Length: 125
Image 1 (cartoon, rainbow, N blue to C red):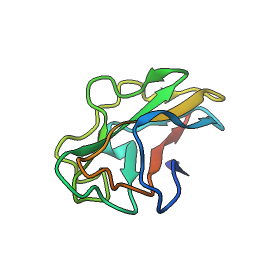
Image 2 (image 1 turned 90 degrees about the vertical axis):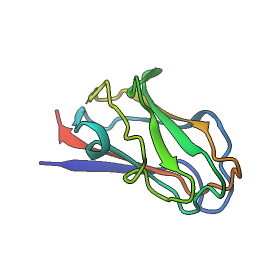
Image 3 (image 1 turned 180 degrees about the vertical axis):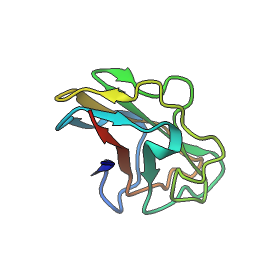
């Protein structure tokens, strides 16, 4: 059966800052992610206010799970589902007890984004 793991990367009101290791946790069980936007989503409470995108990377044991195209949220929007460029997941097999980290690789020009959440969607392996 399909399962989703949702986690908050920040609080609801403080503006995000770019950087690595914004969140670290261990996978509670092995999971096979669905491909692309079906397997990973991001949302914001407050959208970016000017041009550019919010770019997020998710890593398993220090290696990105999205090789060619990271997770993005377009300026003025609060979800990655409608992003102009969808993510490409290169590592869909997340191992039980793997260390998962979240990096914020870029912010919109206004850097007003806040309330980042990530959802991983797939099936237990």
